[in-house]
Image (cartoon, rainbow, N blue to C red; front, top):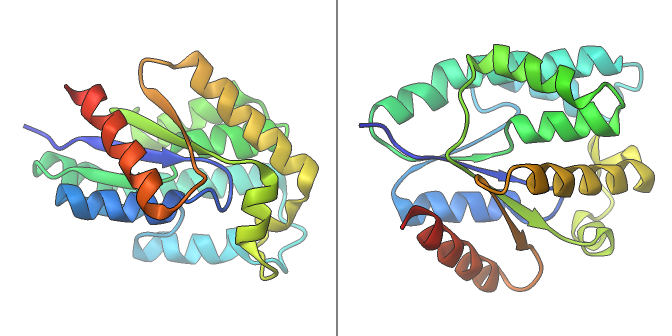
Length: 199
C-alpha cells in the first residue's frame, strides 16, 4: 500500500506553499517542495533562484529543474510514498511544463518528456491548481523577488494561461480552485474538493 501523491501548482504567490504545508499537517503526511528539498537540490535551488544569475540559459534552467526533480523523487517522494505516507508537494512536473515549456518557449512536450525521464514517470494522484489574478499575487510578492518572480508580467501571464490550459487537458486529475480569500477559506475549498475526489 502506498501513500497518496498530492501536488500543488500555480503561479508565484497564489498560496500554494502555505496550503500544501497545512494540508500535509491535516493529513499527517509529508510536506515537500521543489526545487531544493534535499541536500543536493538545495544547491541547485540556489543557482536557479539567484536574481544575479542573469546569464543562465533557458535550456540549462530546464535541465537543472529536472536534475533537482530526479534527486527529489529518488530521495524523498518515492520512499515516502512506498512507506505508506501521503506526500504533499509544492510544485512538480506541471511547473516545469508551464514555466520552461510555455514561459521560456522551450516546448511543453519536450519538458514533459524530460520530467518523465527524471522521475521514472512518477505521476501525482491529484494536482490542485490554485489560481489568482496577477494583481493579487503581485501584492503578495512584495519587493524582494527571486529570479523567476522578477521575470515580468508578460511571462507570468503566459504562466497563468499555461496552467489553466494544462488543467483543461487533464480534468481527471487536475482541480482548479480560487486562491483568493483567507487562508481558512482556501483550506476549506481544498478539503471539500479532495473529499469529493477521493470518495
